[in-house]
Length: 147
Image (cartoon, rainbow, N blue to C red; front, side):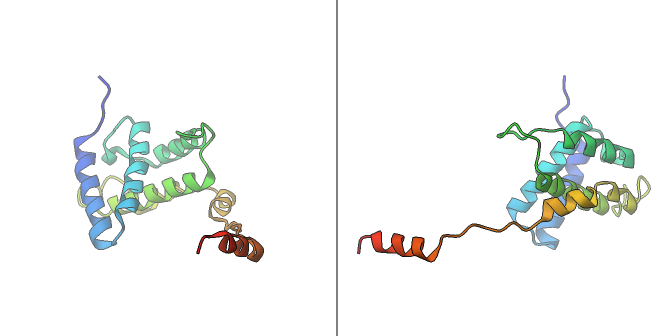
């Protein structure tokens, strides 16, 4: 039987989600995105206890993520998706490092292994120019609307 979850992980994730909602004031959409990132990591580690985390696991997960394909497009995940997934994991494991039963297991600095290269981070966070309609196009739309 394939394992679908880890009870200890579920308890600490629930505590983390509560922290994000109540202390950090994150929206439900953001918390859901964090849950998805954690689920990707847990699937990769076959739901091993977070207490067994090692920085090398973050590196191997990152390499795995680089080769993953999107659910809808069947193309490789975008740099922005990689960046957001890794940042969410980085923040979670940084938070975990300060929790009572995790303090002795790993260090705050271990979360730094969830970083993209500087080049990939620049690509992921680049501001792209948004196309907007011209004034003539706007006037055309307004003039073609019924009164």
